[in-house]
Image 1 (spheres, rainbow, N blue to C red):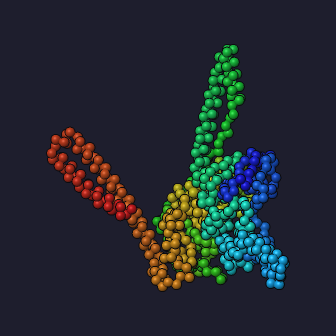
Image 2: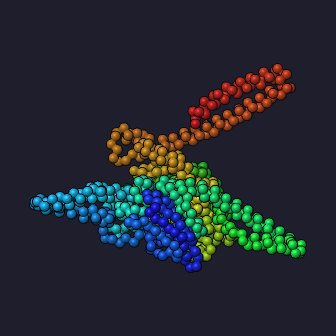
Length: 635
Protein backbone atom coordinates (compact mmCIF):
# COMPACT_ATOMS: atom_id res chain seq x y z
CA UNK A 1 0.00 0.00 0.00
CA UNK A 2 1.34 3.43 -0.97
CA UNK A 3 -1.58 5.73 -0.07
CA UNK A 4 -4.56 5.40 2.30
CA UNK A 5 -7.44 7.70 3.19
CA UNK A 6 -9.20 6.86 6.45
CA UNK A 7 -12.61 8.28 7.48
CA UNK A 8 -12.16 11.57 5.58
CA UNK A 9 -14.96 14.10 6.03
CA UNK A 10 -15.36 17.55 4.50
CA UNK A 11 -18.20 20.08 4.67
CA UNK A 12 -18.73 23.48 3.07
CA UNK A 13 -21.31 25.95 4.35
CA UNK A 14 -22.91 23.37 6.62
CA UNK A 15 -23.42 20.85 3.79
CA UNK A 16 -21.41 17.62 3.97
CA UNK A 17 -19.61 17.00 0.68
CA UNK A 18 -17.62 13.88 1.71
CA UNK A 19 -18.30 11.63 4.70
CA UNK A 20 -16.38 8.66 6.14
CA UNK A 21 -14.29 8.31 2.95
CA UNK A 22 -11.90 5.36 3.22
CA UNK A 23 -9.90 3.74 0.43
CA UNK A 24 -6.31 2.80 -0.41
CA UNK A 25 -4.00 2.64 -3.43
CA UNK A 26 -1.44 -0.14 -3.84
CA UNK A 27 2.06 0.22 -5.32
CA UNK A 28 1.90 0.44 -9.14
CA UNK A 29 -1.93 0.37 -9.04
CA UNK A 30 -3.82 2.43 -11.62
CA UNK A 31 -7.10 3.74 -10.18
CA UNK A 32 -9.85 6.16 -11.24
CA UNK A 33 -11.97 8.46 -9.10
CA UNK A 34 -15.43 9.07 -10.58
CA UNK A 35 -18.60 10.95 -9.66
CA UNK A 36 -20.85 13.68 -11.05
CA UNK A 37 -19.59 17.26 -11.25
CA UNK A 38 -19.59 18.72 -7.75
CA UNK A 39 -19.37 15.31 -6.04
CA UNK A 40 -16.07 16.26 -4.37
CA UNK A 41 -13.43 14.54 -6.53
CA UNK A 42 -11.11 17.56 -6.84
CA UNK A 43 -11.71 18.40 -3.16
CA UNK A 44 -10.55 14.93 -2.14
CA UNK A 45 -7.43 15.22 -4.29
CA UNK A 46 -6.62 18.58 -2.68
CA UNK A 47 -7.09 17.05 0.79
CA UNK A 48 -4.67 14.27 -0.14
CA UNK A 49 -2.17 16.92 -1.31
CA UNK A 50 -2.76 18.88 1.97
CA UNK A 51 -3.83 21.95 0.00
CA UNK A 52 -6.99 22.09 2.12
CA UNK A 53 -7.60 20.41 5.50
CA UNK A 54 -10.10 17.61 6.12
CA UNK A 55 -12.68 18.18 8.86
CA UNK A 56 -12.01 14.65 10.08
CA UNK A 57 -9.89 11.61 9.20
CA UNK A 58 -6.33 11.26 7.94
CA UNK A 59 -4.32 10.71 4.77
CA UNK A 60 -1.39 8.27 5.04
CA UNK A 61 1.46 8.22 2.49
CA UNK A 62 3.95 5.39 2.90
CA UNK A 63 7.28 6.44 4.39
CA UNK A 64 9.86 7.59 1.86
CA UNK A 65 7.35 7.74 -1.03
CA UNK A 66 6.88 10.81 -3.23
CA UNK A 67 3.62 12.16 -4.61
CA UNK A 68 2.91 14.42 -7.61
CA UNK A 69 -0.28 16.30 -8.55
CA UNK A 70 -1.64 17.76 -11.79
CA UNK A 71 -4.45 20.24 -11.06
CA UNK A 72 -7.00 21.18 -13.75
CA UNK A 73 -5.69 24.73 -14.08
CA UNK A 74 -2.05 25.79 -14.08
CA UNK A 75 -0.59 29.20 -13.27
CA UNK A 76 2.78 28.83 -14.99
CA UNK A 77 4.29 32.24 -15.78
CA UNK A 78 7.88 31.11 -16.21
CA UNK A 79 10.09 32.91 -18.71
CA UNK A 80 11.76 29.58 -19.45
CA UNK A 81 11.10 27.93 -22.80
CA UNK A 82 8.92 24.82 -22.98
CA UNK A 83 12.03 22.66 -23.41
CA UNK A 84 13.95 24.31 -20.56
CA UNK A 85 10.92 24.11 -18.27
CA UNK A 86 10.90 20.32 -18.63
CA UNK A 87 14.69 20.16 -18.53
CA UNK A 88 14.54 21.89 -15.12
CA UNK A 89 13.00 18.68 -13.73
CA UNK A 90 16.20 16.85 -14.68
CA UNK A 91 18.47 19.37 -12.92
CA UNK A 92 19.83 16.68 -10.58
CA UNK A 93 20.98 14.69 -13.64
CA UNK A 94 22.59 17.80 -15.14
CA UNK A 95 24.40 18.42 -11.85
CA UNK A 96 25.53 14.80 -11.77
CA UNK A 97 26.80 15.05 -15.37
CA UNK A 98 28.71 18.24 -14.54
CA UNK A 99 30.27 16.52 -11.51
CA UNK A 100 31.34 13.61 -13.75
CA UNK A 101 33.00 15.97 -16.25
CA UNK A 102 34.86 17.80 -13.47
CA UNK A 103 36.00 14.46 -11.98
CA UNK A 104 37.28 13.39 -15.41
CA UNK A 105 39.39 16.55 -15.62
CA UNK A 106 40.78 16.01 -12.12
CA UNK A 107 41.65 12.37 -12.88
CA UNK A 108 43.93 13.46 -15.74
CA UNK A 109 46.34 15.11 -13.32
CA UNK A 110 45.84 13.02 -10.14
CA UNK A 111 48.13 10.28 -8.85
CA UNK A 112 48.26 7.72 -6.08
CA UNK A 113 45.59 7.80 -3.40
CA UNK A 114 43.94 10.88 -4.91
CA UNK A 115 43.53 9.08 -8.26
CA UNK A 116 42.16 5.99 -6.50
CA UNK A 117 39.62 8.14 -4.62
CA UNK A 118 38.58 9.96 -7.82
CA UNK A 119 38.18 6.67 -9.66
CA UNK A 120 35.89 5.31 -6.92
CA UNK A 121 33.92 8.56 -6.98
CA UNK A 122 33.64 8.45 -10.77
CA UNK A 123 32.49 4.84 -10.64
CA UNK A 124 29.71 5.77 -8.17
CA UNK A 125 28.70 8.80 -10.23
CA UNK A 126 28.48 6.86 -13.50
CA UNK A 127 26.47 4.11 -11.79
CA UNK A 128 24.01 6.63 -10.32
CA UNK A 129 23.91 8.50 -13.64
CA UNK A 130 23.03 5.29 -15.47
CA UNK A 131 20.39 4.33 -12.89
CA UNK A 132 18.76 7.77 -13.38
CA UNK A 133 18.63 7.15 -17.16
CA UNK A 134 21.18 9.93 -17.55
CA UNK A 135 22.43 8.77 -20.95
CA UNK A 136 18.92 8.99 -22.43
CA UNK A 137 17.32 11.90 -20.55
CA UNK A 138 17.26 14.16 -23.63
CA UNK A 139 15.48 11.61 -25.79
CA UNK A 140 13.09 10.88 -22.90
CA UNK A 141 12.32 14.60 -22.56
CA UNK A 142 11.78 15.07 -26.31
CA UNK A 143 9.60 11.95 -26.38
CA UNK A 144 7.35 13.35 -23.63
CA UNK A 145 7.07 16.75 -25.37
CA UNK A 146 6.15 15.21 -28.71
CA UNK A 147 3.82 12.72 -27.04
CA UNK A 148 1.94 15.63 -25.44
CA UNK A 149 1.52 17.30 -28.82
CA UNK A 150 4.37 19.84 -28.88
CA UNK A 151 6.20 19.89 -32.27
CA UNK A 152 9.92 20.72 -32.20
CA UNK A 153 9.14 24.13 -33.71
CA UNK A 154 7.45 25.09 -30.39
CA UNK A 155 10.18 23.84 -28.02
CA UNK A 156 11.70 27.33 -27.72
CA UNK A 157 8.42 29.14 -26.98
CA UNK A 158 8.40 30.88 -23.55
CA UNK A 159 5.94 29.22 -21.17
CA UNK A 160 4.51 32.64 -20.23
CA UNK A 161 3.17 33.09 -23.80
CA UNK A 162 1.21 29.81 -23.84
CA UNK A 163 -2.53 29.28 -23.55
CA UNK A 164 -4.04 27.72 -20.44
CA UNK A 165 -4.32 24.34 -22.16
CA UNK A 166 -0.70 24.43 -23.32
CA UNK A 167 0.48 25.33 -19.81
CA UNK A 168 -1.42 22.33 -18.45
CA UNK A 169 0.39 20.11 -20.97
CA UNK A 170 3.75 21.57 -19.86
CA UNK A 171 2.84 20.90 -16.22
CA UNK A 172 1.85 17.33 -17.12
CA UNK A 173 5.16 16.82 -18.90
CA UNK A 174 7.10 18.11 -15.88
CA UNK A 175 5.13 15.80 -13.59
CA UNK A 176 5.70 12.69 -15.74
CA UNK A 177 9.44 13.38 -16.00
CA UNK A 178 9.77 13.87 -12.24
CA UNK A 179 8.51 10.27 -11.76
CA UNK A 180 6.94 10.42 -8.27
CA UNK A 181 5.89 7.13 -6.65
CA UNK A 182 2.22 8.09 -7.02
CA UNK A 183 0.68 10.57 -9.47
CA UNK A 184 -2.68 12.31 -8.95
CA UNK A 185 -4.16 13.55 -12.23
CA UNK A 186 -7.22 15.83 -12.36
CA UNK A 187 -8.74 15.71 -15.88
CA UNK A 188 -5.40 15.13 -17.67
CA UNK A 189 -6.98 14.64 -21.14
CA UNK A 190 -8.89 17.94 -21.28
CA UNK A 191 -6.30 19.69 -23.45
CA UNK A 192 -4.95 16.72 -25.41
CA UNK A 193 -5.86 15.56 -28.91
CA UNK A 194 -6.52 11.91 -29.71
CA UNK A 195 -2.93 11.02 -30.58
CA UNK A 196 -1.67 12.59 -27.34
CA UNK A 197 -4.33 10.81 -25.28
CA UNK A 198 -3.35 7.48 -26.86
CA UNK A 199 0.32 8.24 -26.06
CA UNK A 200 -0.56 9.12 -22.45
CA UNK A 201 -2.52 5.86 -22.09
CA UNK A 202 0.53 3.84 -23.06
CA UNK A 203 2.82 5.94 -20.85
CA UNK A 204 0.64 5.53 -17.76
CA UNK A 205 0.06 1.81 -18.36
CA UNK A 206 3.84 1.32 -18.31
CA UNK A 207 4.48 3.83 -15.52
CA UNK A 208 6.41 2.13 -12.68
CA UNK A 209 4.50 4.01 -9.94
CA UNK A 210 0.85 4.25 -8.86
CA UNK A 211 -1.66 6.54 -10.60
CA UNK A 212 -4.96 8.01 -9.38
CA UNK A 213 -6.96 9.69 -12.16
CA UNK A 214 -10.02 11.93 -12.10
CA UNK A 215 -11.46 11.90 -15.61
CA UNK A 216 -14.72 11.88 -17.56
CA UNK A 217 -12.99 10.16 -20.51
CA UNK A 218 -14.48 6.67 -20.28
CA UNK A 219 -12.39 5.21 -23.12
CA UNK A 220 -9.23 6.47 -21.37
CA UNK A 221 -10.29 4.96 -18.04
CA UNK A 222 -11.20 1.64 -19.67
CA UNK A 223 -7.70 1.37 -21.12
CA UNK A 224 -5.76 2.21 -17.94
CA UNK A 225 -7.43 1.56 -14.60
CA UNK A 226 -8.01 -1.65 -12.65
CA UNK A 227 -9.88 0.01 -9.77
CA UNK A 228 -12.65 2.63 -9.64
CA UNK A 229 -13.24 4.79 -6.54
CA UNK A 230 -16.71 6.33 -6.68
CA UNK A 231 -18.05 9.36 -4.82
CA UNK A 232 -21.85 9.26 -4.75
CA UNK A 233 -23.84 11.52 -2.43
CA UNK A 234 -20.78 11.94 -0.20
CA UNK A 235 -20.23 8.19 0.14
CA UNK A 236 -17.01 6.65 -1.20
CA UNK A 237 -17.01 3.07 -2.58
CA UNK A 238 -14.33 1.02 -4.36
CA UNK A 239 -14.87 -1.34 -7.32
CA UNK A 240 -12.36 -3.65 -8.98
CA UNK A 241 -12.03 -3.57 -12.78
CA UNK A 242 -12.06 -0.81 -15.40
CA UNK A 243 -14.79 1.78 -15.99
CA UNK A 244 -17.07 -0.52 -18.02
CA UNK A 245 -16.91 -3.21 -15.31
CA UNK A 246 -17.72 -0.57 -12.69
CA UNK A 247 -20.62 0.77 -14.75
CA UNK A 248 -22.20 -2.70 -15.06
CA UNK A 249 -21.69 -3.46 -11.38
CA UNK A 250 -23.06 -0.05 -10.38
CA UNK A 251 -26.21 -0.55 -12.47
CA UNK A 252 -26.78 -3.93 -10.82
CA UNK A 253 -26.21 -2.54 -7.30
CA UNK A 254 -28.45 0.45 -7.99
CA UNK A 255 -31.23 -1.90 -9.07
CA UNK A 256 -30.77 -4.12 -5.99
CA UNK A 257 -30.60 -1.13 -3.62
CA UNK A 258 -33.71 0.43 -5.13
CA UNK A 259 -35.61 -2.85 -4.82
CA UNK A 260 -34.50 -3.21 -1.17
CA UNK A 261 -35.68 0.36 -0.53
CA UNK A 262 -39.08 -0.34 -2.15
CA UNK A 263 -39.45 -3.60 -0.16
CA UNK A 264 -38.67 -1.82 3.11
CA UNK A 265 -41.07 1.03 2.31
CA UNK A 266 -43.77 -1.53 1.58
CA UNK A 267 -43.06 -3.29 4.91
CA UNK A 268 -43.18 0.05 6.77
CA UNK A 269 -46.56 0.91 5.20
CA UNK A 270 -47.86 -2.58 6.05
CA UNK A 271 -46.76 -2.27 9.71
CA UNK A 272 -48.31 1.22 9.97
CA UNK A 273 -51.62 -0.13 8.63
CA UNK A 274 -51.53 -3.04 11.13
CA UNK A 275 -50.75 -0.60 13.99
CA UNK A 276 -53.68 1.60 12.98
CA UNK A 277 -56.04 -1.42 12.87
CA UNK A 278 -54.86 -2.72 16.26
CA UNK A 279 -55.42 0.68 17.85
CA UNK A 280 -58.90 0.84 16.36
CA UNK A 281 -59.84 -2.37 18.25
CA UNK A 282 -59.25 -0.27 21.38
CA UNK A 283 -58.54 -3.26 23.63
CA UNK A 284 -55.67 -3.54 26.08
CA UNK A 285 -54.00 -6.47 24.29
CA UNK A 286 -54.37 -4.93 20.83
CA UNK A 287 -52.99 -1.57 22.04
CA UNK A 288 -49.97 -3.31 23.64
CA UNK A 289 -49.35 -5.18 20.39
CA UNK A 290 -49.62 -1.90 18.44
CA UNK A 291 -47.08 -0.26 20.78
CA UNK A 292 -44.73 -3.22 20.37
CA UNK A 293 -44.88 -2.85 16.60
CA UNK A 294 -44.27 0.91 16.88
CA UNK A 295 -41.10 0.27 18.92
CA UNK A 296 -39.97 -2.21 16.27
CA UNK A 297 -40.49 0.42 13.57
CA UNK A 298 -38.56 3.03 15.58
CA UNK A 299 -35.57 0.66 15.84
CA UNK A 300 -35.64 -0.16 12.12
CA UNK A 301 -32.70 1.34 10.21
CA UNK A 302 -34.51 3.08 7.38
CA UNK A 303 -32.74 2.83 4.04
CA UNK A 304 -32.02 6.04 2.13
CA UNK A 305 -33.67 6.24 -1.25
CA UNK A 306 -30.93 5.38 -3.80
CA UNK A 307 -30.10 7.92 -6.48
CA UNK A 308 -31.80 6.65 -9.60
CA UNK A 309 -31.36 7.64 -13.22
CA UNK A 310 -34.24 10.06 -13.48
CA UNK A 311 -36.27 9.40 -16.62
CA UNK A 312 -37.36 13.04 -16.67
CA UNK A 313 -33.73 14.03 -17.25
CA UNK A 314 -33.71 12.18 -20.56
CA UNK A 315 -33.72 14.48 -23.57
CA UNK A 316 -35.85 13.95 -26.66
CA UNK A 317 -34.62 15.56 -29.85
CA UNK A 318 -37.13 15.82 -32.66
CA UNK A 319 -36.70 17.88 -35.84
CA UNK A 320 -39.69 20.05 -36.67
CA UNK A 321 -39.36 19.39 -40.42
CA UNK A 322 -37.94 16.32 -42.18
CA UNK A 323 -35.12 17.30 -44.55
CA UNK A 324 -34.42 15.85 -47.99
CA UNK A 325 -32.19 12.80 -48.26
CA UNK A 326 -29.18 14.89 -49.37
CA UNK A 327 -28.30 17.09 -46.38
CA UNK A 328 -24.84 18.48 -47.22
CA UNK A 329 -22.56 18.43 -50.27
CA UNK A 330 -19.00 19.82 -49.93
CA UNK A 331 -16.82 20.19 -53.04
CA UNK A 332 -13.15 21.20 -53.37
CA UNK A 333 -13.09 23.05 -50.04
CA UNK A 334 -9.76 24.68 -49.07
CA UNK A 335 -8.61 26.89 -46.21
CA UNK A 336 -5.27 28.25 -45.01
CA UNK A 337 -4.16 30.93 -42.59
CA UNK A 338 -0.87 32.86 -43.02
CA UNK A 339 1.90 30.29 -42.69
CA UNK A 340 -0.60 27.56 -41.78
CA UNK A 341 -2.23 25.52 -44.57
CA UNK A 342 -5.10 23.53 -43.05
CA UNK A 343 -6.75 21.52 -45.81
CA UNK A 344 -7.23 21.58 -49.57
CA UNK A 345 -9.70 20.10 -52.05
CA UNK A 346 -11.97 18.48 -49.44
CA UNK A 347 -14.96 16.64 -50.86
CA UNK A 348 -17.63 14.86 -48.85
CA UNK A 349 -21.40 14.52 -48.57
CA UNK A 350 -23.78 13.75 -45.72
CA UNK A 351 -27.14 11.99 -46.00
CA UNK A 352 -30.21 12.33 -43.79
CA UNK A 353 -29.98 10.30 -40.58
CA UNK A 354 -26.18 10.03 -40.53
CA UNK A 355 -24.18 10.92 -37.41
CA UNK A 356 -20.78 11.96 -38.70
CA UNK A 357 -17.77 12.68 -36.47
CA UNK A 358 -14.85 14.79 -37.71
CA UNK A 359 -11.65 13.82 -35.94
CA UNK A 360 -7.96 14.72 -36.24
CA UNK A 361 -5.03 16.20 -34.37
CA UNK A 362 -5.19 19.70 -32.88
CA UNK A 363 -4.67 22.39 -35.50
CA UNK A 364 -5.78 20.37 -38.53
CA UNK A 365 -8.86 22.55 -39.14
CA UNK A 366 -11.79 20.57 -37.73
CA UNK A 367 -13.50 23.53 -36.04
CA UNK A 368 -12.67 25.68 -39.09
CA UNK A 369 -14.78 23.36 -41.28
CA UNK A 370 -17.77 23.80 -38.94
CA UNK A 371 -17.32 27.58 -38.96
CA UNK A 372 -17.23 27.62 -42.76
CA UNK A 373 -20.44 25.54 -42.94
CA UNK A 374 -22.10 28.01 -40.55
CA UNK A 375 -20.74 30.98 -42.54
CA UNK A 376 -18.80 32.31 -39.54
CA UNK A 377 -15.65 32.45 -41.70
CA UNK A 378 -15.24 32.11 -45.49
CA UNK A 379 -13.45 29.31 -47.31
CA UNK A 380 -10.48 30.17 -49.54
CA UNK A 381 -11.97 28.10 -52.34
CA UNK A 382 -14.60 25.46 -52.94
CA UNK A 383 -18.33 25.35 -52.27
CA UNK A 384 -20.89 23.65 -50.10
CA UNK A 385 -24.64 23.33 -50.47
CA UNK A 386 -27.44 22.31 -48.11
CA UNK A 387 -30.23 20.02 -49.21
CA UNK A 388 -33.96 20.63 -49.32
CA UNK A 389 -35.59 21.83 -46.07
CA UNK A 390 -32.33 21.57 -44.09
CA UNK A 391 -32.36 23.69 -40.89
CA UNK A 392 -29.07 23.94 -39.00
CA UNK A 393 -28.67 23.99 -35.23
CA UNK A 394 -25.09 25.06 -34.35
CA UNK A 395 -23.21 24.57 -31.09
CA UNK A 396 -19.97 26.53 -31.06
CA UNK A 397 -17.39 26.82 -28.31
CA UNK A 398 -17.66 30.64 -28.26
CA UNK A 399 -21.40 30.45 -27.36
CA UNK A 400 -22.54 33.32 -29.58
CA UNK A 401 -26.18 32.20 -29.16
CA UNK A 402 -26.37 33.28 -25.48
CA UNK A 403 -27.52 36.60 -24.00
CA UNK A 404 -25.09 37.66 -21.27
CA UNK A 405 -27.64 39.79 -19.39
CA UNK A 406 -30.17 36.96 -18.90
CA UNK A 407 -30.37 34.25 -16.25
CA UNK A 408 -30.03 30.61 -17.30
CA UNK A 409 -33.75 30.02 -16.70
CA UNK A 410 -34.77 33.11 -18.70
CA UNK A 411 -32.44 32.16 -21.56
CA UNK A 412 -34.44 28.95 -22.03
CA UNK A 413 -37.93 30.22 -21.15
CA UNK A 414 -37.67 33.30 -23.41
CA UNK A 415 -36.51 31.20 -26.35
CA UNK A 416 -39.16 28.50 -25.74
CA UNK A 417 -42.15 30.13 -23.97
CA UNK A 418 -44.37 27.05 -24.37
CA UNK A 419 -42.25 25.01 -21.94
CA UNK A 420 -43.48 24.66 -18.36
CA UNK A 421 -41.24 25.53 -15.41
CA UNK A 422 -40.91 21.82 -14.61
CA UNK A 423 -39.86 20.97 -18.18
CA UNK A 424 -37.24 23.73 -18.14
CA UNK A 425 -35.88 22.62 -14.76
CA UNK A 426 -35.70 18.96 -15.88
CA UNK A 427 -33.78 19.95 -19.01
CA UNK A 428 -31.36 22.14 -17.04
CA UNK A 429 -30.89 19.39 -14.44
CA UNK A 430 -29.69 17.09 -17.22
CA UNK A 431 -26.98 19.67 -17.86
CA UNK A 432 -26.11 19.97 -14.15
CA UNK A 433 -28.04 23.15 -13.26
CA UNK A 434 -30.21 22.49 -10.21
CA UNK A 435 -31.83 24.52 -7.43
CA UNK A 436 -30.96 28.22 -7.43
CA UNK A 437 -28.23 27.63 -10.03
CA UNK A 438 -30.86 28.16 -12.75
CA UNK A 439 -31.13 31.84 -11.73
CA UNK A 440 -27.43 32.60 -12.25
CA UNK A 441 -26.70 35.27 -14.85
CA UNK A 442 -25.07 34.01 -18.07
CA UNK A 443 -22.31 36.64 -17.75
CA UNK A 444 -21.25 35.18 -14.38
CA UNK A 445 -20.81 31.62 -15.70
CA UNK A 446 -17.55 29.89 -16.54
CA UNK A 447 -16.80 28.83 -20.11
CA UNK A 448 -17.80 25.26 -19.31
CA UNK A 449 -21.11 26.34 -17.75
CA UNK A 450 -21.94 28.53 -20.76
CA UNK A 451 -21.21 25.54 -22.97
CA UNK A 452 -23.76 23.47 -21.08
CA UNK A 453 -26.41 26.21 -21.41
CA UNK A 454 -25.73 26.46 -25.17
CA UNK A 455 -26.08 22.71 -25.50
CA UNK A 456 -29.32 22.67 -23.49
CA UNK A 457 -30.73 25.43 -25.72
CA UNK A 458 -29.73 23.57 -28.86
CA UNK A 459 -31.49 20.42 -27.67
CA UNK A 460 -34.80 22.32 -27.92
CA UNK A 461 -34.17 23.94 -31.30
CA UNK A 462 -36.05 21.34 -33.41
CA UNK A 463 -33.35 21.72 -36.09
CA UNK A 464 -32.92 18.76 -38.45
CA UNK A 465 -29.15 19.16 -38.95
CA UNK A 466 -27.11 19.56 -35.75
CA UNK A 467 -23.54 20.84 -36.09
CA UNK A 468 -21.68 20.45 -32.78
CA UNK A 469 -18.16 21.56 -31.82
CA UNK A 470 -16.84 19.47 -28.88
CA UNK A 471 -20.30 18.92 -27.34
CA UNK A 472 -19.06 16.76 -24.43
CA UNK A 473 -16.48 19.23 -23.10
CA UNK A 474 -17.20 20.03 -19.43
CA UNK A 475 -19.97 17.39 -19.17
CA UNK A 476 -19.76 14.70 -16.51
CA UNK A 477 -20.29 11.05 -17.43
CA UNK A 478 -24.04 10.99 -16.64
CA UNK A 479 -24.67 14.06 -18.82
CA UNK A 480 -22.62 12.51 -21.64
CA UNK A 481 -24.75 9.36 -21.46
CA UNK A 482 -27.93 11.47 -21.61
CA UNK A 483 -26.59 13.30 -24.69
CA UNK A 484 -25.53 10.02 -26.33
CA UNK A 485 -29.01 8.57 -25.89
CA UNK A 486 -30.60 11.74 -27.28
CA UNK A 487 -28.41 11.75 -30.40
CA UNK A 488 -28.86 8.02 -31.02
CA UNK A 489 -32.66 8.43 -30.94
CA UNK A 490 -32.55 11.62 -33.06
CA UNK A 491 -34.14 11.20 -36.50
CA UNK A 492 -32.30 14.17 -38.01
CA UNK A 493 -28.67 14.45 -39.07
CA UNK A 494 -25.61 15.22 -36.93
CA UNK A 495 -22.12 16.48 -37.82
CA UNK A 496 -19.76 17.01 -34.90
CA UNK A 497 -16.14 17.49 -33.86
CA UNK A 498 -15.03 15.60 -30.75
CA UNK A 499 -11.99 14.14 -29.00
CA UNK A 500 -14.17 11.91 -26.80
CA UNK A 501 -13.52 8.45 -28.26
CA UNK A 502 -16.15 6.69 -26.11
CA UNK A 503 -18.76 9.25 -27.23
CA UNK A 504 -17.72 8.81 -30.88
CA UNK A 505 -17.87 5.04 -30.56
CA UNK A 506 -21.39 5.24 -29.09
CA UNK A 507 -22.88 7.77 -31.52
CA UNK A 508 -21.01 7.97 -34.86
CA UNK A 509 -22.23 6.06 -37.91
CA UNK A 510 -19.35 7.50 -39.95
CA UNK A 511 -15.99 9.14 -39.22
CA UNK A 512 -14.14 11.73 -41.30
CA UNK A 513 -10.49 12.08 -40.29
CA UNK A 514 -8.57 15.24 -41.21
CA UNK A 515 -4.98 14.19 -41.74
CA UNK A 516 -2.15 15.39 -44.01
CA UNK A 517 -4.44 18.25 -45.22
CA UNK A 518 -6.87 15.69 -46.58
CA UNK A 519 -10.02 13.84 -45.53
CA UNK A 520 -10.27 10.07 -45.01
CA UNK A 521 -13.72 8.47 -44.77
CA UNK A 522 -14.53 5.54 -42.43
CA UNK A 523 -17.98 3.95 -42.63
CA UNK A 524 -18.30 2.89 -39.00
CA UNK A 525 -17.65 3.89 -35.39
CA UNK A 526 -14.36 4.55 -33.57
CA UNK A 527 -13.49 0.86 -33.18
CA UNK A 528 -13.81 0.45 -36.97
CA UNK A 529 -11.65 3.55 -37.49
CA UNK A 530 -8.87 2.08 -35.30
CA UNK A 531 -9.02 -1.16 -37.28
CA UNK A 532 -8.79 0.51 -40.70
CA UNK A 533 -6.81 3.69 -39.92
CA UNK A 534 -3.35 2.69 -41.14
CA UNK A 535 -4.63 1.02 -44.29
CA UNK A 536 -6.95 3.82 -45.45
CA UNK A 537 -4.61 6.67 -44.48
CA UNK A 538 -1.91 5.21 -46.76
CA UNK A 539 -4.42 5.08 -49.62
CA UNK A 540 -6.34 8.36 -49.28
CA UNK A 541 -4.05 10.71 -47.32
CA UNK A 542 -0.41 9.58 -47.50
CA UNK A 543 2.09 11.76 -45.64
CA UNK A 544 4.32 14.15 -47.52
CA UNK A 545 7.34 11.96 -46.68
CA UNK A 546 6.05 9.05 -48.82
CA UNK A 547 8.15 8.90 -51.97
CA UNK A 548 6.93 5.64 -53.45
CA UNK A 549 5.60 6.42 -56.96
CA UNK A 550 3.09 3.59 -56.99
CA UNK A 551 1.58 4.79 -53.69
CA UNK A 552 1.30 8.34 -55.05
CA UNK A 553 -0.39 7.13 -58.24
CA UNK A 554 -2.74 4.99 -56.14
CA UNK A 555 -3.58 7.95 -53.88
CA UNK A 556 -4.31 10.10 -56.95
CA UNK A 557 -6.55 7.52 -58.62
CA UNK A 558 -8.53 6.64 -55.50
CA UNK A 559 -10.00 10.13 -55.17
CA UNK A 560 -13.18 11.26 -53.45
CA UNK A 561 -15.45 10.00 -56.26
CA UNK A 562 -14.19 6.49 -55.72
CA UNK A 563 -14.70 6.89 -51.98
CA UNK A 564 -18.34 7.72 -52.76
CA UNK A 565 -18.56 4.71 -55.08
CA UNK A 566 -17.15 2.52 -52.31
CA UNK A 567 -19.75 3.89 -49.88
CA UNK A 568 -22.52 3.22 -52.41
CA UNK A 569 -21.23 -0.32 -52.96
CA UNK A 570 -21.21 -1.02 -49.23
CA UNK A 571 -24.73 0.42 -48.83
CA UNK A 572 -25.97 -1.76 -51.72
CA UNK A 573 -24.36 -4.85 -50.17
CA UNK A 574 -26.03 -4.08 -46.85
CA UNK A 575 -29.44 -3.69 -48.55
CA UNK A 576 -28.93 -6.93 -50.52
CA UNK A 577 -28.04 -8.71 -47.29
CA UNK A 578 -31.28 -7.53 -45.62
CA UNK A 579 -33.36 -8.58 -48.66
CA UNK A 580 -31.69 -12.01 -48.73
CA UNK A 581 -32.37 -12.54 -45.03
CA UNK A 582 -36.03 -11.56 -45.56
CA UNK A 583 -36.37 -14.03 -48.48
CA UNK A 584 -34.78 -16.82 -46.41
CA UNK A 585 -37.15 -16.14 -43.53
CA UNK A 586 -40.18 -16.15 -45.88
CA UNK A 587 -39.19 -19.47 -47.52
CA UNK A 588 -38.36 -21.14 -44.20
CA UNK A 589 -41.77 -20.10 -42.86
CA UNK A 590 -43.49 -21.56 -45.96
CA UNK A 591 -41.45 -24.78 -45.62
CA UNK A 592 -42.79 -25.25 -42.05
CA UNK A 593 -46.33 -24.55 -43.24
CA UNK A 594 -46.01 -27.32 -45.90
CA UNK A 595 -44.85 -29.79 -43.21
CA UNK A 596 -47.92 -28.92 -41.13
CA UNK A 597 -50.23 -29.27 -44.16
CA UNK A 598 -48.77 -32.64 -45.13
CA UNK A 599 -49.29 -33.97 -41.59
CA UNK A 600 -53.01 -33.24 -41.95
CA UNK A 601 -54.86 -36.64 -42.48
CA UNK A 602 -57.14 -35.09 -45.09
CA UNK A 603 -54.13 -34.00 -47.20
CA UNK A 604 -52.28 -37.31 -46.64
CA UNK A 605 -55.00 -39.27 -48.57
CA UNK A 606 -55.08 -36.68 -51.40
CA UNK A 607 -52.33 -37.90 -53.77
CA UNK A 608 -52.50 -34.89 -56.10
CA UNK A 609 -52.20 -32.42 -53.22
CA UNK A 610 -49.29 -34.41 -51.70
CA UNK A 611 -47.40 -34.32 -55.02
CA UNK A 612 -48.02 -30.59 -55.38
CA UNK A 613 -46.74 -29.87 -51.85
CA UNK A 614 -43.73 -32.17 -52.29
CA UNK A 615 -42.74 -30.36 -55.51
CA UNK A 616 -43.13 -26.98 -53.79
CA UNK A 617 -41.01 -28.21 -50.85
CA UNK A 618 -38.27 -29.41 -53.23
CA UNK A 619 -38.31 -26.07 -55.07
CA UNK A 620 -38.03 -24.21 -51.72
CA UNK A 621 -35.06 -26.40 -50.74
CA UNK A 622 -33.30 -25.49 -54.00
CA UNK A 623 -34.03 -21.76 -53.55
CA UNK A 624 -32.87 -21.84 -49.94
CA UNK A 625 -29.58 -23.52 -50.93
CA UNK A 626 -28.91 -20.69 -53.40
CA UNK A 627 -29.95 -18.01 -50.89
CA UNK A 628 -27.72 -19.48 -48.17
CA UNK A 629 -24.74 -19.30 -50.54
CA UNK A 630 -25.64 -15.73 -51.47
CA UNK A 631 -26.00 -14.77 -47.80
CA UNK A 632 -22.56 -16.22 -46.94
CA UNK A 633 -21.01 -14.23 -49.79
CA UNK A 634 -22.67 -10.98 -48.74
CA UNK A 635 -22.01 -11.43 -45.02
